[in-house]
Amino acid sequence: MPLPMTMTSCSLRPGEGGLTRGLLTGSMYTLLTSNVSSVNSVVEWAMAKARTRSQGSYHHGNLSDALVQAALELVEAEEVSKLSLRAVARHAGVSPAAPYRHFESREALLAFISTQGFHMRTEAMQEALAQCEDEPRLRLLEVGNAFVLFAHHHPAHYAVMTSPDLHDDTAYPELAAAGVTSMKILLDAIEACAVAGDLTGDVRVLAAAAWSGVHGLASLLASGHIHRLGLEAETTEDLIRQVTGAMLSAMSQAGPGRV
Image (cartoon, rainbow, N blue to C red):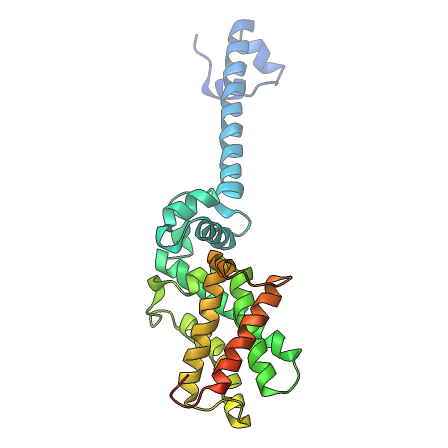
């Protein structure tokens, strides 16, 4: 005779005695309870797997930071042009779709990194100026040194900041503003030198000359080609100061239109 439904549902709870064990034979009871235990084990395993995936593979504690760090590591190992969101996701240990929760495109990720880099460089130059005497020529030198040192210590950031992939920053107002703020420090330092009579000529032309010089030095340091000249310096910072000092001396001696 079939068991009533209420009794059958009670019997599906393993470990209960009394009425359940009395209604079922030993073999039937063992079969049902073992099956329920198996199902429970599978459910627990699936839930644990989901929690692991959620906490480890997806969130990373802070997914945005993890993606940025992965991108920087890939850029430093290879180059900006080879960077893709799929490669970043793979390197960060997340699904291919995960980056799109924070960055709508590869360019958006590069813009974020570049903006971050400009803020970092601005801070480095401001710190250098804060420790410098109030003398225009020395202040310009410190700005140039801080520029090159930033590029030397943060090569991946600098590579993204100078990448042709981001030549048009109009789509990213924060990036454009960060770049202007950083460049203004150089322009202000050059203008102060011009007012003091240390430099002569169009401030914008002088800024272009200085920018070209420090960017060129940063690129030579990054590639290692600067060492082909056999320059003698105890540290990289000493080498940077030697070269930026020579740049400023050359700019000071050149007249208008000859920079």
